[in-house]
Every structure is written in C-alpha cells, then in structure tokens.
Length: 567
Image (tube, rainbow, N blue to C red; front, side):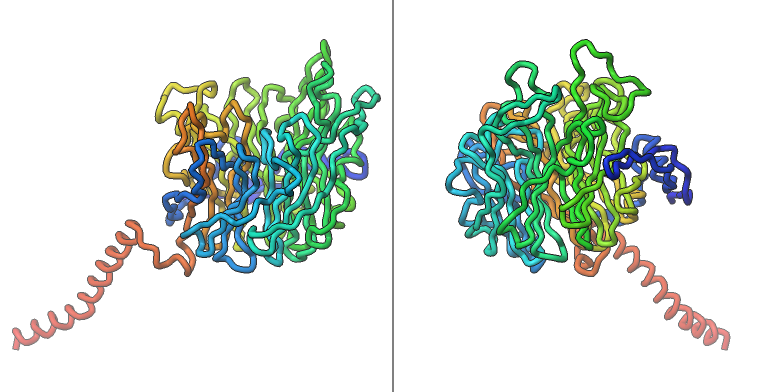
C-alpha cells in the first residue's frame, strides 16, 4: 500500500513573464508524493492490480519499396466515430505525407487515396531532430495535416507553411498556404544588424478547438534558412516559435505570430517548437523549450548565480497561453531545473496536454547536470492555468545509463494520463556493458496515471520486439529523425502508432508503420477480455463460491443425519 502525505512546501521558484516584465511568484504547495518522486529520481508507483492488456503490434503500411521510410506517425481517433482510427505521417524518402485509416478500431487498415501535399511541391518533410508534421481531427470530424513544403526538402532552403484538410479521411484534400516563405527576408541579428536570408519553417505542429470546429492552430519553429553561413552566423538569428490561427476551419489563416514577441530578448533569447493543446474553454497552450543565447568566444561560462537565459546556460521549459484565440499571449516558466546546467542535454521538445477539467500536463526529456548522464522522461502539471507548476518528477522507472527520449502525452476523457517514449534500455539485453555512446536498441515504453499524475503505473513496453536504430531511420544518427511517441487515449483503450524497423538492416534501412493497443480492463467494454489473471481469479472465486455452497447445503444435511442417528 502506498502512503501519501497530504502536502508539503516546495522551495522551487516559478518565474512568470507577464506584460514584458519578469514576475517571481511565491513557492507553491504541492503534493508530497510528487516532490518525493522528484528527489528520488523515479516515479511514485501506483499499485497496478489489473494492468492493461497490450496486444501484439500489427503492420499498417504495406509498401514493399526497399527504400521506404514511414516514420514520425500521428495517432488519431475520429471524434464523430470512435471506431475510426487514423495514422497520419509520411514516407520520408519519398517526401509524401500520407494517411492510413481503420474503420474497425484497428483490426484492418488501408491507405487513403490522395497525398496530403500540394502538387506544386516535391516534398513535405525534412530531416530535423523533431516532428516534421502535425495532424489532428477537428470537432466536426475534418482531418487536418500541417507541414512545411518546398522542392528541396533540406534544412537550408526557404519553404512554405501549409495546411491540408479532408472531409473524407484523406481520399481528397484541400490546401491552404498559410505563409509563403520569402527568399530574401531581413532577419535581425544579435549585433543589431540585419541578415538577408530565406524564411524556413520546421517542427510543425497543430491543434484544434474541441468545442469549436472553426478554430485551427498551426505552430512551427521559424528562422533563417542558411543558418551555417557566413561563418559565425549560426545562433546570431534566434529561432522563434510562431502560431497561425484559422477561425473558419482552416480555409484562411492569420499571419504566423511570434508568440514571445512581447518578451525582451534579454529575458528570452529564442525558443523551439510550440507543441499545441487547446482546453475545453478554448484556451490555447503552446509548450516550448528555451533557446539560450550562444556564448561569445572567450566569454566566461554561466555560474550558479547567473540569471536564467544567460548565454551558455541551460534552457527552461516554457508555456505561452492565449485566452483570445491567439491574438495575445502571456508566458510562464514550466520548469527551470536545467538552468545553471550547461552539461544538460535536452534533445527533445516538450509535449503537452489539457484534461477535460482544465489541468495542464507537460512531459519532456532531460539529463542530469553530470556530463554524459542519460536523458530521462520528466513530467509536471499545473491546475491554475499554467501560472505555477509542481516540481518535475521522473517517469522512467529504470536506473540504467541508457537514454529515454521523445515523450508523447495524451489524456483520456475520464482523466487518465498516458505517456509513452522511445527507450534505449533494451540495448542492455544485447550488450550489458553498453553506454550512451553505443546504445542501439529501443522500444516504445509506456506508463499511465489515474490520479492526476501523482502516482504512475510500472513502465511497460508496447511493441513486441526491440528496434535497431541503424536498421531504420528513427534515432539513426545519420538522419536526425525523431518525433514524439504517437499515442491517443480513450476511456477504455490507449492506441499507439509505431515506426518499426524490423524489416530493415543496417545496410538497407527500412521503416514501416505498426499499430498496437493497451486495453484498460476496468471498464464495461473490456470486461469480457480473458487473461491468465482473469482465469486464476475466476477459479479462486469459483472455489470460494463452491465452499460457501457446501456450507449452506451441507451443514443442514449433516445436522439431519446426526439427528436421525440419535433417534
């Protein structure tokens, strides 16, 4: 039995950015169980008396091309029909954005007829350490895919931000060019000069309003295209997070807005990717990771007394909040544990979600201050609209030196929080002496919480075999492809879409889409599921019932026989 203290005082200071000025709030009261988990380095574990039943993964894509590379999937459930599931993603090598549909909750799958890419472009994906497209259903069942497109597909060229929308599950698409990137745009630099370069969008994400089908939000990382030349320019043009808004179901959009434009660059130099979520009341949340200013040559390194945002220091996790459909934004600090931590590596962008009751959750990967330490999966939550956050806790329950990366998060209507990530601990099964330098095998691992994130279930792998990163493209060091683990929650089931390299080799990488489910066996729709635990429990109940029946029937008979004998 797990004992929980009611509450404890936290010494963490939350920094909120409001109206162009930094404001320091008082320490917040948090549940002690979360604080203890943060101090111990592992999650507070909930008793899992009836863990979910995880089914074997099944192949979704059927392409047999030896160069196929289906990766970075998005897992969706149709809000109008829960039997309809969608996996939206791309064949990376072909530059095509595609959709696979199941109309029987994942039993069978088929690819939709059309490509979700405007015909004037040759590619809708590009190599980047983060998601290259986002997908979502609107409240009315319209399917959306957002990405950036061009004819080169590289990281050093101008491209256009676009939206594809479909009312027939991807058999036909209508397109909106949200912003056409200028080839010669004037970017301000740190030195106060301007740099002329192409506009480049990447790490595109999307969210829709669950209560109003008109509102669609597309976010992206925005910056100059040629970020490596001339010499010394890298880092001189800060990357920014921008969000464009549609109020007519994706037909038209506002110009992409820098969601931190009201914050002086001395407070926030730059930031990466806004992962978007919209609450039931229409409030929009954009979760970002700070981009710290580069350390000038010969400048002293940040110290323990340096303020957040100091050049060369560690980044903060941030959230921008809009209550007026993206017209204005306010900024708060979610977590600053990486500040004064130059050795920290944060390779993953944050993933956030909002519950039906308005609680906000965020997860990301971060290492400890020690150089060479592995990245772990962190989680935090807020119940006051993002103004204050509980101390972050670690969700991976192993103590290995392997990395845990790219977490994704989803919240079921009943409030269950699901988190999944790419986990390299399977490497140790092949090489017990492995280090981060030669970690090679990963699985998608999963945990969930039914009490708002205070306690978590034991970690479990959801794919049925480890993936060799060198036999595919995800996490392959030669390609730089990584996106949030893909999952979607209902009250009964958690659905997962997987990038699977089991058909590939290190000399001929291949990736296919696979799909699996975790059935939570505490609801009416899953009570007929038969497992060995259920069989044992049924036998035990039968034995007890038989014993009770014997006592009820047998005792009177025994008594009558005794009476007859005495007579």
